[in-house]
Image 1 (cartoon, rainbow, N blue to C red):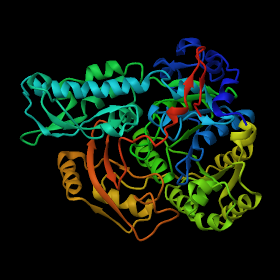
Image 2: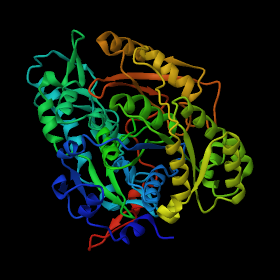
Image 3: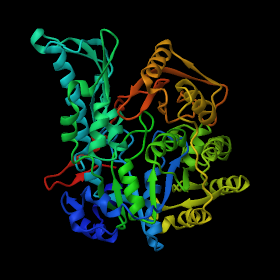
Image 4: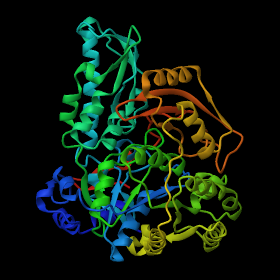
Length: 556
């Protein structure tokens, strides 16, 4: 079979104006980035304001292997399948981050014959959104350090700066650094840190902002530091919000691309669900619901992360709710959760599959708690056996859960029609009774305990003294009603990546907490999860190249 990039390069893309026209958009609604990419103008909102919302389908997954198991591929293929069946469908996806593209996991454009294109552009610089986010973030950092250099009128304590620099690349050497060395002229020496751009509060704000005015207000609300007297200092105190918004003027507009089969796709925002809230922008999702009868979106990593945050953060902020959840499972991932090493997942192993299916059960139980019906999508791999597939089907049937084989990687939309039919049945039944896991009024520590116990399956939660102190401080500042965004490993339901399957009798360890006032949630870090990933021993970058004609190779 051809590689992902070879399949994408062989595709005859439609001009993006034609894709837009099929979605009911005119040329004046577009800001073109070449022939095959465009941003949607702010006027589209006025045009669609009175249109009824289409149905919303959320694609999530069981806990994956380190290689990933195909959520984006399933999302793309489902959209293509619905379009082939005559339904007006639109996909709303996250943008890739350069760090994983050159690191280990890959991009976020799907795979095989279920991809969004132009794949190379999307997985590299795309329309520059990531760079704008990085620039806006680091402008605020520069203004903060400059304020201290130029007299520090606000009395900022350099030991209590909570806002960090970012870059869109995996670089472990930048996790902990010292800046301002070399004498008085070079600034105030202090410890600093880098996060990856997609984990930043600026990224979250982009994804949650309604418009430019809301974006500017949220930027102004970013907590950057505390004074020597212990008072909070916000970005608005540094008068940074206007310039930050100016840098994000174009980035706030959703991007329109297409699948290999010409189905329209909005890609906007790209936070990781293990260290951020893991959803694409509210703007893109809501526009997809306005422009199509069925909008399909995804949330990052397993349902314990992305789906929980989608429901408890994004739906809370946007006033939307899913009508159906597609839970992606693979034979490979279930065997991995049954104890099979990553290198041996291609070999048949019924014992491991039977042992690991408890991970699927955990996610099914969890999704029921939100009141949304679930369809299990078995994302097919060539090494899967008929016996393994039948075991999963029978298991789901015994639980009364709809299940479908998804062959979109190999067959595109045609391979997703079984899944599409099951999804349409659920949508037609209209049995969704959505509710969130917790109420706003619940104290922050109790929100964390509720997620840990009901979603992760933990016996309890321990809070490091610094984390407990900061959560109390955040509450005293008036932010106790905010939702929580828990940073946790994606490979386990617990905060320990080595505990696979459906672990029990464990305690989640909360090591730190920080207020993301602009985003409107509290970030809680657990276990050993890193906000700045590193590169593997052999990074994907070693295989990526480009020839004199500009043709890229090795990109998946």
